Amino acid sequence: MNKKNMFGLLVLVSVMFGLSAVAQEKVASKADLAKVAQNPIGNLISVPFQYNANFGTGPNNDVQSILNIQPVLPVGVGDDWNLINRFIVPVIDQPKPVDETGMGDIQYQGFFTPSRPKGLIWGIGPVLSFPTATEDLLGSEQWSAGPGIVLLKMAGPWVFGCVADNIWSFSGDNDRSNVNAFFFQYFVNYNFEDFYLTSVPAITANWKADSSDRWTVPFGAGIGKIFKIGRLPINCQLHAYYNVEHPDNAANWQARLQIQLMFPKKSNI
Image (cartoon, rainbow, N blue to C red; front, side, top):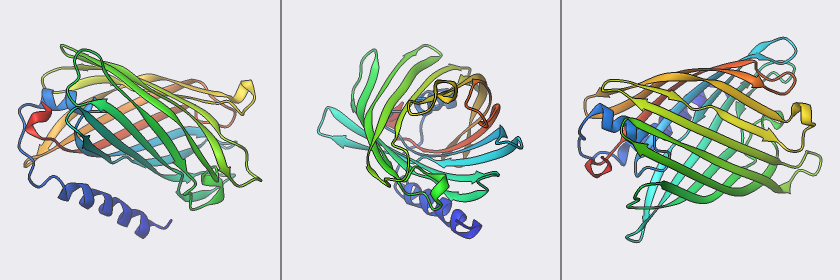
């Protein structure tokens, strides 16, 4: 994928979800907005752009760059349920020896969640991975699926919980390895009036790999703040994580910058 196509994809996603928010109302405070943004299954249209710089990748200790475009579109299902549609579109710059740049496999997450939750907030539904990579070595070339779950709790200034899924391949290129992949992400946020502290590491396991190359376990934290451009809230985060466990030739540590365009209704707060 060349730079022109990459830029076009960013603009298309932003415009598509931005148009759906023209009639949304202005909401109350930045602290309230931060809590809404920290709920992965909240009834909130948003478009996060998450850039990850993975340092120490490959035999030459290069930098792998991944831009994840992650639009979220909630849909009401009757009076009591919402379906939170989440997409992850990765744009990858993979260093040598692969030395490829392009789009990776797109993932879809669909979480059914009560529209009026009380106490523990939860969601459950399918996770699908599609072999959409523009270069063979940037994806699995497999169709994969599995179950996913989200659990979270809001208590005063705290928002904490976890997201987990496991996917298995069911069709694809017979010359490529089957997929059996686990994902677990806990999140802990503490909200102040004007900013918040956050830790959102992504723990993964490739069950098909040898035990010494199976796990990626990061540890770290970040800081976030809500800005507004006119009536448009923007959630910005900056993180750093050290991989205490990782496969050979995988990154030693990661820096993450995320910019999330938010389109909330007043009823979200």
